[in-house]
Structures are given as C-alpha cells and as structure tokens.
Amino acid sequence: MNKEYILVTGAAGFIGSAVANKLIDLGKSVITIDNLSTGDKSNLNKELVFFEGDVFDTNILDQVFKYNIKAILHIAGQSSGEISYDNPIYDLRSNTESTLLLLKYAKNSNCKKFIFASTMSVYGEQETEIVDEKSIPNPISFYSVGKLASESYMKVYSKLGIDCIALRLFNVYGPGQNLKNLRQGMVSIFLAQAFQNSSILIKGSRDRFRDMIYIDDVVEAFIKSIKANVDFRIYNVSTGTKTTVGDVINSINAMFNDNLKIRYEGETPGDIFGIYGDNNLIKSDLVWSPKINFKDGLSNMYNWIIDNKIYDL
Image 1 (tube, rainbow, N blue to C red):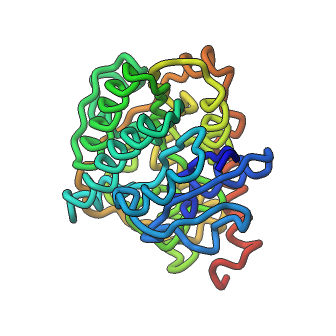
Image 2 (image 1 turned 30 degrees about the horizontal axis):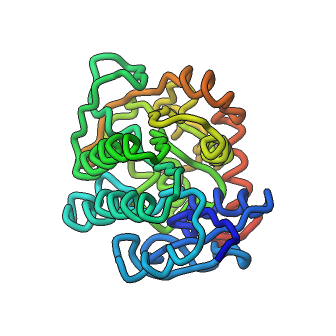
C-alpha cells in the first residue's frame, strides 16, 4: 500500500478523536487502534480506518503495519492516576508496553516520526510551583511511572533513527470530554456532578491548583509536532497559568447561579497538590502558544453540554 497514513491511537477517546478529526480536515489519511474501554465508537470519524483492540496486541499491530504508516501519534492508554492503582499491570501494558511495541514496529517499518501523549504527572511533587522540561521528574503514581518509562524508551529509539516527541499534557479539558468517567479529568468530573446532582464532591483541598489547557490548543501541539525537525524532545503543553480548585468550583457554581451544594471530603491516591508548566520551549521550537483562557474554555464546554443535551437539565 503506497498511500500514506498517520496512526492515531485512541481515536475514539477525547483527545485522540479531536486530533484525528483535525488531521482528516487537513486532508490526511488516518488509521486508529482503540479498545473502546473509555472511548466511544460514535467519536470515530467515518473516514478513518479502525481496528478495535488493545495497542499492545501484536496481532492487531501486524494488521495495522501492513499500511504505510508515515507517523505515529500514540494517544491511547489508561489515563487516570487514580485508576492506575486498581490494576497497575494493565496500566503498564496500556501505557508503556504499547509504547515500546509501537516503537519497535515503527523501526521495522521505517516510520520515522513518533509523538507521545505524556503527562505533567511525571513531575510529581516539586519544590517549585512552576516546572519546565529540565525539572527532575518525581512520579508518585503507577500511571506517571509508566509514562516516564515510555519517554525513556523513546529516547533510546531516537538514537535508532526515529524522531520522537513527548508532549507532557497538563490538565486537558473541553468539549468532547467523557463526562461518564468520574475518575479522570477534574473539570469534566465537576461538571458531570453539577449537571447530574446539583452538587460537587471535591476530594482534597480547594487550594490545590492545576494548569488547565484547552483541547483545541492540545490538538494544535500534536499537529505542529508532526512537522517538527527534531530527534528527541520533551515539551510541556501548558498555559503557564495557575488555576486553583477553588477557582474551578467558583466558576462552575456561577454558571448554576451559585445554587450548587459544595462538599470537600477525602483525597485522591497519587494526587499532587499543584504545579503549572513553563511553556517557553514549545513556544520557541514549534511556534505554538495557547489561545483559549480558562474562562472561555469552560464556557465552551458548558455550552457544548447543553447544546448536545448530554444531561436532562
């Protein structure tokens, strides 16, 4: 098959579907692998080639790599620090073994471009609130350990002729996020509770903080990474802005005329108190910068929920 394809793993999920759709809009041919564990088949663009199953299933990879794969965007995987405690072995296979296998197949098929959805979680707790790519990783969950290991495998394979970029995604949110998964995605969890129960349960302090990055800005980072001429790079995909849990709650509550019942109780395993990301490196290398602030992004997400009648209001 001479036709060139871009492999976007996890194209039934939140980030993967957004990236796949953008690539198809740009006229690219896209192929995907997704086990539909958290993604939804309705998210799959009708124009892409779909293989259902796990990315670490070599039988599926054998079929996928019969196609002429020009670049790999590895977005699929278990995406929750909390859930990684339920089944660390699955987390390892889903996030790390899959990466290693894809790199092996890329080398054997002469695919020269590999882009990985890593995570800010690899930084763990830090002495400073703001982190850059030179900050020493300190993973504190099974999920973040596996993601960091994947980055290390990429660094090795970059010396074997594959251009590798790890995008350390900060807290991604926006239209299309899975509102049924109440264990992954702070904004989606809080909005889902607000719409379903007119209340929000927060696990941990309201003073914790995050760097909230809008889905469209994340998609743009993936697109620009495809064109990057580098052997190995790690980039923070972040806004460089600190948003506290209290800020998120207050903004959501205001959308409900301050009628939500707010309760603080317990904590989340593997959760960090807060960091936000210096994004100067990706700005200079890829001429990328975030365009959507949190207020506008949250409003877009709220309107998407209402417009699509995801919940009965």
